[in-house]
Length: 257
View 1: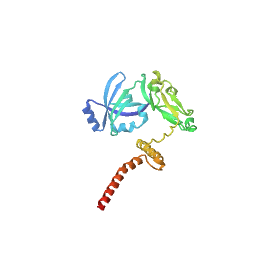
View 2: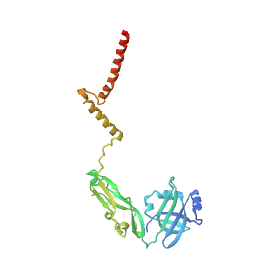
View 3: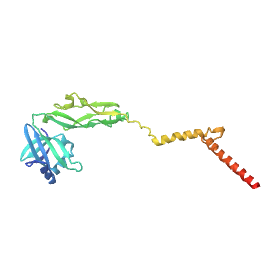
View 4: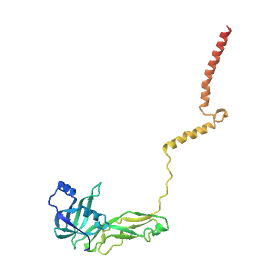
């Protein structure tokens, strides 16, 4: 079987969260190795050594070799837990690999000729990736580093599914085994720009303004610009004028005396 990474590991004799915390403070990473018909084995890995490998895509989809007390053990990485705020590995899960036993592992999907696809180059479409990786099952000797999807003949509004992915001999996609032919990649038209929404306050304020303008052009007695409220205002001033006239007459009469 092809081994892509090799690193050392020590047996971990002291279990528990407190012991794991002390390991991390010393620049070590607690790990667990399981499967292969053997009991789980607690291990200790080196933090800096792991950080140089986890940035490589192949680290998650290849067979690695652990050197434990001088003994070699092939395995695959099943899970890596990272610290939520720092670039620090918190824990690693490893699965033993046996040459004659099938393994299940997620492989990355590489997309070729995206810019040259007719749906992009000739029709102005946009490539949309639905899946970046996929789980496969195979013997260790048949394990590829990645799967590849070629978009050289993919047109607008067309889709590639799991069943369209070419597979090496001995490799199967587990979703297809269970009847799930999921979409992987498609090319679609760019979304048209939606009209800018008018704020609710502006829309509400526009109605009275139009109503006022209409009322201003249809004032009483044909007076241009007269508002509906103008007539009541004039009527309300009439009693006041009559009262002033009455007071003026009374003053004139008093003067004659």
